[in-house]
Image 1 (cartoon, one colour):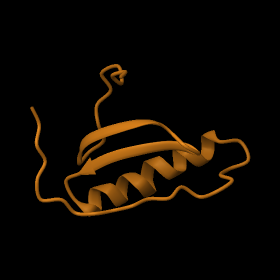
Image 2 (cartoon, rainbow, N blue to C red; image 1 turned 120 degrees about the horizontal axis):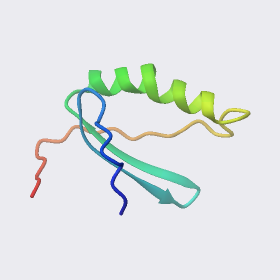
Image 3 (tube, rainbow, N blue to C red; image 1 turned 60 degrees about the vertical axis):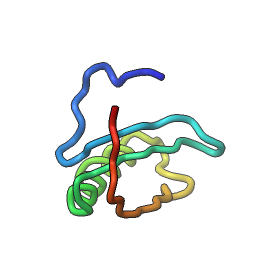
Length: 74
């Protein structure tokens, strides 16, 4: 596992993990609200990815969302 080099998480994000998975990458991001996730998705993530992938996406990223009621750390 590689730490991100000390980069801070975006506003509202509590947890982030990512790694290769069959057919691409899987990312787990936990935000403090649906709104901070949507702000990050629309205002940062999709714009950045689209500008960095030559020719755009072959398939749009797929996302699953759910609300949680417990987040445990060490």
